[in-house]
Image 1 (cartoon, one colour):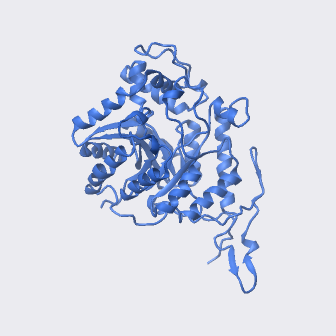
Image 2 (image 1 turned 180 degrees about the vertical axis):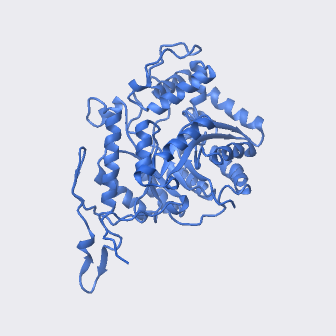
Image 3 (image 1 turned 90 degrees about the vertical axis):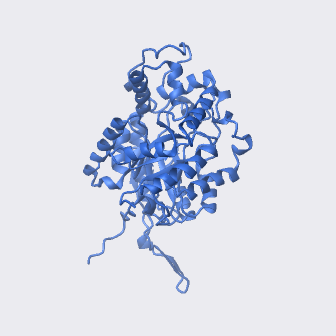
Length: 446
């Protein structure tokens, strides 16, 4: 085994990551909201020794989309599903996406602390902001907050959550039955936070999480997102198409960490990867063609419009992209909009060709081939400072995850790039991350 090991997340999006996954022959309607099916996918990922399963989430159903009837948009609420999965798995990390835009720090900190205790220290929080007028309307707002304000609020939100997790020191619960003393009040702290966005007194009403803090994950790649990741994140999920782009991002974010007193190893960069695996290249290509044939045109245009932040429904699908507003004018996901624009320009793609390229990976990297070819591509990025690992995005469930675990994982293990057994029991241990010190605990002089 080489000293440095790949980190792998299984991105659990049912029925699959391809926009037309629900139309694939092996995908069944009864598995969409079926806990037993979700449980089997988590157990498959655990059998493959993945570091974590990862759940995306958002506060809308996409009802206002022109292609609403053609798109699978239903999903489990992350805390509910991950709590269930905590009871039926034993090692794999459990990462849920929860927005800082339409939530409050006390509730979120309490829920993640609960999940961390229920799972024995396997919880992780994917910190995101929410954009779009449909999301704003669902929470009583007439307008969506500006991009910069969302990230400013997110930064303070994470700070408050960490204070709340630290509001109970590790040994605050005395549980002295004889002397009727449950807790040592000197080791339980009001946080008394007063900021621009939040006023929170504390303390939390649950003990400090097993891991100190759940692992902090972040998914933005804009300037604000990179700065937030350098300051607070321990894992960052990102999307890049080329080795050179991924290397530039990797160097950029890691170089920002020193000013926050952090070492580059304290942040694991894990780009999303959408693998189509075949025992032969012909088999893999046939799977890809089958999925492309299932994309309704209106759904493809709708997905591309969402990624770009611009409505393309009135333009010819076999023509080029129209002139687009500057990305600085987009109030959605700026980094993803820029990535998709760059892809279209670099390869001179029509609207149809472009939506076909992102229909599975949603802007992440698509890799196609045999297990050896897939492993070659992952190894190249891993060994050339483009990634510390990958968030694997199967095209469909269960086939896509089964293929990766049964065919690609053994190849990575043969190359000494990935574990054959778990060496720890918490998500921090899987990722090689330290347990954070409590900011309120008094330092003991030696």
